Length: 339
Image (tube, rainbow, N blue to C red; front, side, top):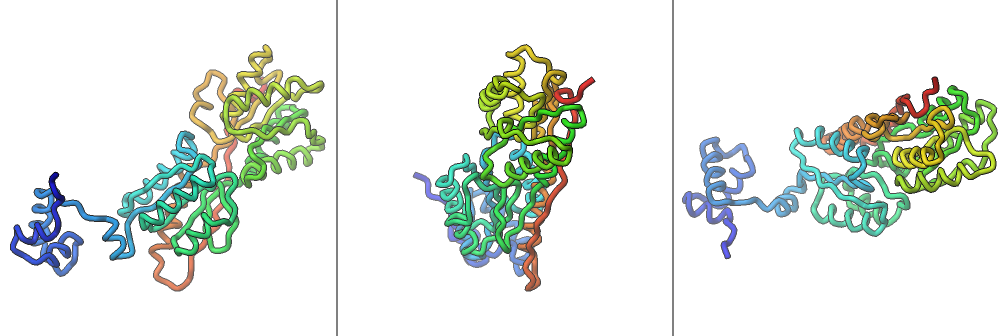
């Protein structure tokens, strides 16, 4: 088995001290450009790889940032990650991505792994059940910069970047009302999660402001899956007084709703109108394009990363904490726009 080259091997080959090799590899200004180049060229020839963890332990900085998301197979979260990377890569940071799958235990394991890797910060969208518990406390106790995005907990001293989910729910519902809808159902997410609760409250407030009585039969909690949209819509259509429109807190649930409505030979949007949430790519390119609420995910990611950079580059004694709320944008398309 071939052993890995060390700085001592490089030093022996060049007949210089190991300390000089170490300084050259770490771009110490005391080392001349000629020596630095010689050491780096020799290190490459000998396939030398620096121990980043050892460097992190020594310097207190790993140039790694952890990003936790519920799942990466959603355009929203992958776009947030893109925004984070576009902001952090030019600053010399690498991004370590972890998925929690809305599992509290997996979230804890990921956080422990990131802390053990000596990450310089953690940017996360919490799972549906996270409280200010051991997982979050571990990050705070280690004094590792923590920034929430999208799904957050309101914790003093912790920055967050979100959209105004209440306003998004309000805009979606108001749009349906403006199209003449009066029996508006809402396929909500898990209402114990703040973003879904806010979207639901926006829906209810729009009904109230327009003199439309809230019908509890029109409110169903779902999981963000197409099948859930189908099952929930079937229940709505089987009601004695079915709705004339649906506002869904998820584009995937909205897609399921559309598939179920078509099975009942109903016309969209004339018989029943649909509005989703998140602006997943398929909503735009379907033959029946779906009206939805855009969450500006790339911008959200860039801002979250910028807040992190402000914190780690802050040389003053004043701590930087920000609560940034972005405006949602309603994108009107065929699924709700009546002739």
